[in-house]
Image 1 (cartoon, rainbow, N blue to C red):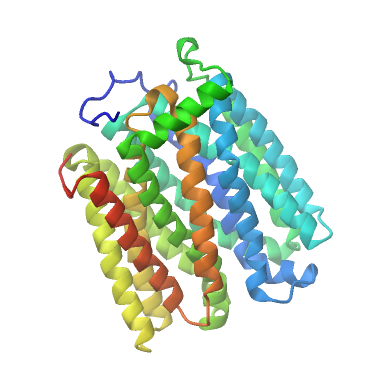
Image 2: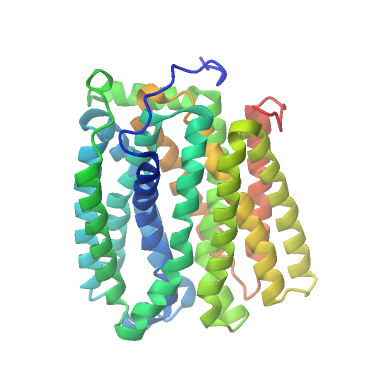
Length: 411
């Protein structure tokens, strides 16, 4: 049985700390996972050289291993967060993530590095599951979309800084220094969270850690139309994002021969994503999540279609790539932040479990789609543009089915 988002539960109590600090802390937690991906990109050639990996496409597995661990482990973190609380799960996971980065820094082989990356991704996955559940504990509906948009805006600073951070570390140390620094940043966030954030899961909402309860939560998540529809639409778009992350280092280094501009590329695209989410935070209370996200998805398809035509026609240059990809990524940010909120709309009673199922699906299967896009790299930008176009078309089809054809509604 599904429940229309218009008939929501009473308004949650709001953040237990100041709104600005709450959003900043949520964004910092979410950013640790992104830092574990984006800061690696400038160092991939150095890692491959140090560990004897000569094929450039194989170096992509340093990113993919982390993402797969991040996706699969969310199924574990969700039920734990509903039983033991958001705070407990996050504190233990952040501590383990710091240790996993130390292990990666000490790795002496490619296999050991990939193992540490899988474990690190699995541990930091709690920052996705428990954090979304934490936000859902405090807000729902358009208010939740507003919080997530502002958090995503702050979160977008990380892709701006992470490649430059990685390049800066390489000026003073080898690639292992990146992992040591991430471990230190994780400890800082752990301390902030420990000192300032109380538990948001109230005693009456604690759920038992039993197979029947967990399976029941999965069933609820996977039978709610909005949960399933927007979860799958997000999966398609996440696949395009991971294809971008898998391909961008080779595109900047090999296709355009401008490795020093990798950080600039991230800055431009992430800045547009941040600006889009800032606009969303201001407009969503007035226009609604559906009108904004459906419109953004449409523009994403138009821009990626144009980008594919430019690439196949032989007109691609560094500047056309940056401009078209930046607008596409801005639309991606607008669509996914609202999709996440709409997928969680009816999941307040099982926020941790629902967030884990949705996160597992979007990240794990998105990563697999991203591998397909990344491995299709052929020296041009066409596979990436095609990936975004196909992902957008699939996402729009899923949204149309979910909304029964009623798209672009101001709700």
